[in-house]
Image: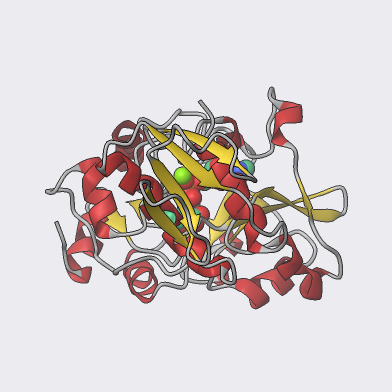
Length: 313
Ligand code: TXA
Ligand code: MG
């Protein structure tokens, strides 16, 4: 149910949970100071309690009071990519942020979103925690309709239209004198080269399950009900009634094809991705074949990772 900006701000300040648009995906927001509302977010999503939340703020000046120190090149990154789809992990003053927000870590993730409604809201409310506004494990929500699919028609949503990036923020953390990517996202590793002078490595979370750098990476994600067959060639296509494909390609006529977008435009594919995965559920698909024959650079790296995770059973 759409609510207006003023009502959303009042609800959040009074300790309610509201869904909020950002340029990446919709978030399920609570005020950083409202502990009950923060717990409600975990309950609503069915989110594991040891998966920390990103703190969204209106400007860098709202991060500084919480930070123990700002890692090297923090300001350069902030200047280049905020407001926008980047989250930076920062060592924090632990007494100022509830342990549940940061899963008892001594760090927290911060982001300044660029969606105009998110910015106007943050200016009124102060810092908001916001995980993606989907049931844990499901594809993220990139429209108000997606949020309502997961949380019901009466759930309060600040409707900001379709999310333009369509894929979550890229999360970076500073370790051993370098920034590394701990979650792939809407900014690719190459995007950081002009700013940092090097391409940040992509962390292997699997190697360190007892103390992961990004706890959320260990959980199942983005998955529709259907089994996904991910293939680079036509192999194993016969048995699947559904295909996730690209506009330039032709697929067998008897199949129901859901279009991810154009092979020339990874931004379009990213924008459509979660909507297409959700469409499979809407059409009660059991088996879908996914065309994985696409480039391996830039944003395609994130798209491939999301599809592979969506296909994990
Ligand atoms: O684009 C986005 O980032 C969206 C929008 C709503 O801003 N938010 C989002 O939140 O994707 P969520 O909760 O779905 O994913 C947050 C990720 C999780 O994988 C979590 O483990 C990681 O951020 N994270 C949060 N705090 C962290 C920390 N202190 N250290 C390492 N990882 C952290
Ligand atoms: Mg999420």
